[in-house]
Length: 490
Image 1 (tube, rainbow, N blue to C red):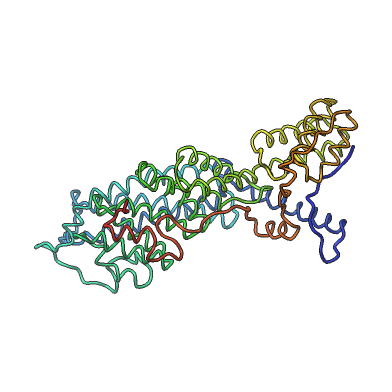
Image 2: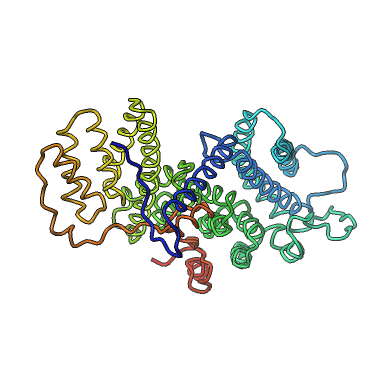
């Protein structure tokens, strides 16, 4: 018995089956080659390419340097004009950390240059650098918070302060792009009562304008300069939102990490379930097609399951349940692709057992893990056929009978009935409820083509953040937090 399964599509414009089959074959081969080439430079552990990992590290390190340089500039009133270094000067602590950040950033840039030029390098250095970045981040935050008092004192000119002549726009050392450095110079240098609210307001405006880096620096200034501010929890969450709204691969990776960090700091907040869903959505937005890397799909499934388990009464459950079904369809389709490959291998190699067992294990995995899979009718028929090849007619009959009973509108029903007649097993009556249900909607040929071109998985996600949305100015949660002095009304 020899067969090949190809998803049926509606043919328009006179394309015949051989042409469609050839087009699909060529497309499949090209996709497989591209996936293999991409996978050769991908971290198995993280599911990210080396270039993506380097981009994330560089972005984090540059953000650290901007925060440190801003804090050092804010303490200019401590400068007495003495060229000797004062070990008690709080700026020396920040300068020491800044020097370490710069050294790691230099190494990251060096590896990034080699990656861009396709030069060889020891990939284990990436793990070492990621550990260094992870170790530096809390030290930078601790240093900034520890020197917040000194920056407050530095905002008032001391009696022995002798200012140096400015050379151009020297105040913020180009920390912010364009005119932003001059615009926010006063907000970023020193501290004063009510300034955290001003920072929060201006940061929100910048993020809405698409100036995400500027907005993040202003939000970060609240965290590092006003550790007791009522706006601090919302500022941390808004930083995660800014990454999510930015939407690049590097930004989505950092958005997921930022939401997860926020959950660590504020595990009982009213927006906990929203943040858990956003962590899952950052993975969903990075998902590729089911015939490619599925590491993001697996992470998304895990995140959604945890969210549904912990958030039993949230209004977000329908959204999370829909996302979980779509993610699991992607994972099930991945297993079906592999099962088809093993099945074809078994047929073309004239009964090699390895191919049959490989197909059977993948199909059984779908039956066990993804019972609502759209193509379950094909899965049941294929699985029944594998048992026939192993001369286990009783097991095969159970699967064919389930197909006829529970999937009465399937294209595989007549084939399943034929196999039941061969086995000599009873043909069950179709389930009356399922008989009235329309068959699972499958993508058309053109839809398949477009998905292959874009490389995006067919999943439903929101492009809005939790506090800040793309078109909700005035009605966003962040506006309510501003009106309520940093907290959301109950």
